[in-house]
Image 1: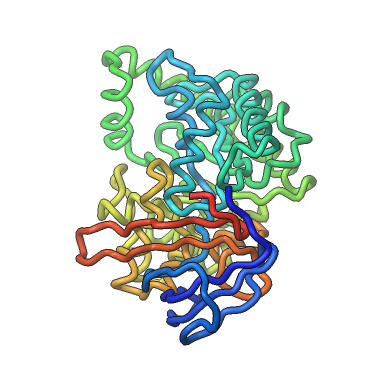
Image 2 (image 1 turned 45 degrees about the vertical axis):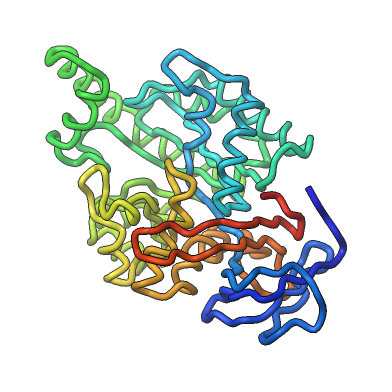
Length: 382
């Protein structure tokens, strides 16, 4: 990765938090030293009129799992999986990523707790060895209804790289799948279960949720509060869910499934996060509230790439036509950074990290943008 103590980005449409200015950005020792409108006084990196945006901040992606287990029963070399994931993350313009690791078995099965610990070790080894382009942090997705969730969490209790923990319950009738029709459509076909096997599966998951969810949720919240770890509540569906999250000190409401829940969370000061694929596709794959509806009501704060890394950049440009690119860019950079307590990045502003992305905008509505260059702390990484 190239590095130099000073660089100038010239001839750029610079996406600032509130406006776009044509000018130049001076980078010194990995930080933004100056932002100036008009022609640069010195030669530098010619952005050719492209947009220069802050590096994107991704809070919730389980994309790493697909690289580690690309086929049923196939487990890839962990370092190789991390590097492959990182390459796609960085070339999508993401310079800070919170990699999701699942804690507890849910409807999709799951990984052994020791397996998740080994995958986290691979991320941390790759970070230390300079193998990675983006900065990687850990996000633990805790399935509170799973009997083994606390056993899985035990492997991470003293890991300083854990920066975000989400609380979720995917049992039937809870949160994401409030109706059995949605649940059956999504899981019965996906798992290929017979009617009898599916009925037994539902009964087991309902019993586990009733037995474990409240106790496990309290234990995880207590741990995160003591450790200073940011909390997220997953799939809030009702006002009661939001009230519970507020009482627990949750900072982020991930993927609320109803407009009422999103409005309540936003009004209570929680940052409302939705999936960028929801924006690009025009709706939720689970049949829940659409992200663009939340934009229309002014209650969407953060976008997450979820399962398609490039969707984060693409969604920002989709929303730019409705709310302007500066506002859309805040949803994928400044606001997630602040929600996660990272005040040193997320905007093109003097004093902040020089995490920058050169982007050629779409020429027509159906066309995606093109990421042409990515810099992390002033070093080109893609």
